[in-house]
Length: 157
Image (tube, rainbow, N blue to C red):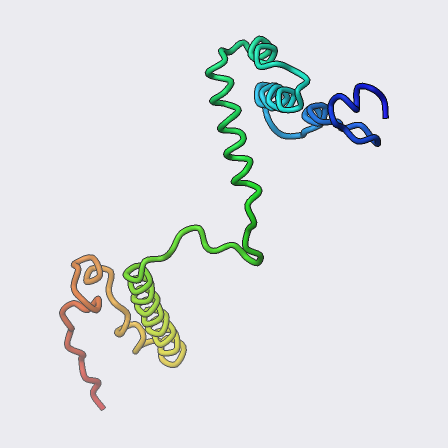
């Protein structure tokens, strides 16, 4: 072991890259990387707090707040997490589920009615024409789309 390693209490071996790893990060702004580097260099004992403050052009209080926040959030990131799929970000309200079920039921009925009208149209175009709601009754807001019924003329035999 060389003299400097003994003084710092380091074991012999591959030297730590420490703060030099920050430059290789692919994400983060240059300011964020400079802050991270300053924090790591002070933790390693390579820089003093004054050196870090001078490098970042901030005061001691701001540096201490930033470093403490970094350490708190880093600790939270290292907490054990549950394995498996993550829970849904938002929960669905029971009333919302019921409203969606009602809407699905209504749409299913509408589809069934449309299919029935289509079958009638294919079976007998004259019947289907009478069963289809007229545009004027649909606009009038009447339920079922039926307006006044016309009397049919009877065919003479």
